[in-house]
Length: 146
Picture 1 (tube, rainbow, N blue to C red):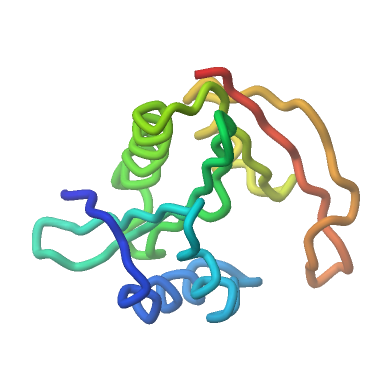
Picture 2 (cartoon, rainbow, N blue to C red):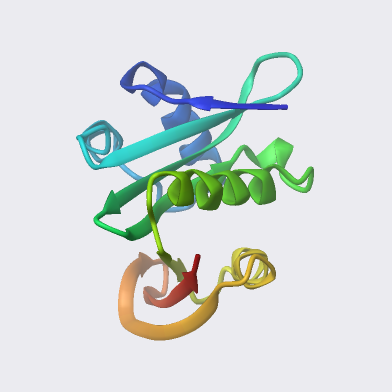
């Protein structure tokens, strides 16, 4: 496993992973726009050099925000999500972040557990934030001091 800087050239692979792993994936435009100055992205490659996951983050002043973290469906359960999350936190600290923020679907229990194990705590709720088959899902807001 290796984590490397991602570039706009990686968007097609990132989009493919996103589409297979999420019912409501980001659009190609959302991916492309996340390669602006304050954003940074990393990809996780397996031992064969195949991209199995990624994250997209933004740092504004000392505030680090995780916008997207995704692991290919067939690669889940191998610790890749944990490795990407830890990299996000370490990279953010190295860039001067003092706190990390994220939001997650309220019904994404596996992700919430991962974030809590990494030291994030719930600090808010956005009702009806995400589109879902049932209409709308709430977003849980999470925070961690670095």
